[in-house]
Length: 120
Image (cartoon, rainbow, N blue to C red; front, side):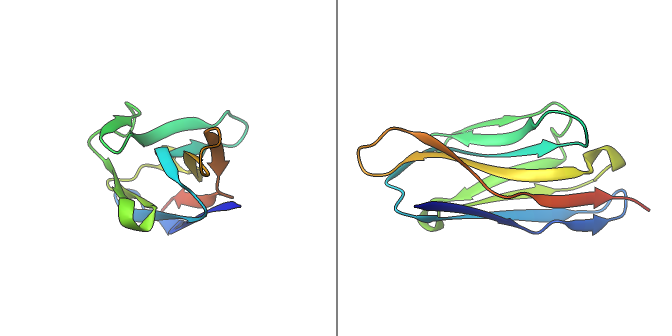
């Protein structure tokens, strides 16, 4: 059983900062990808940032230069430092883990989401 839990969301004023955290627990043997996605009301979930194989990072164009993704391999933890927040960053943010238990297939594991609201 694998669990993914996000924390750190909340209400912040435009221009402010937030740091999201994601903790993965369970019998994960190998993690391929960890990432952050977000979903605006009425829209599809979209990539914010991800780390692949621990070294390759991808960012959505809309967050480049403002958001920084990082990972603590020892803790199976993932972070998203969000600076210079804009109202359009308001969304539910989800953590994704792609990993496998033992020698099984790689699977996607999603957290329950954390709300980020940017408003004055």
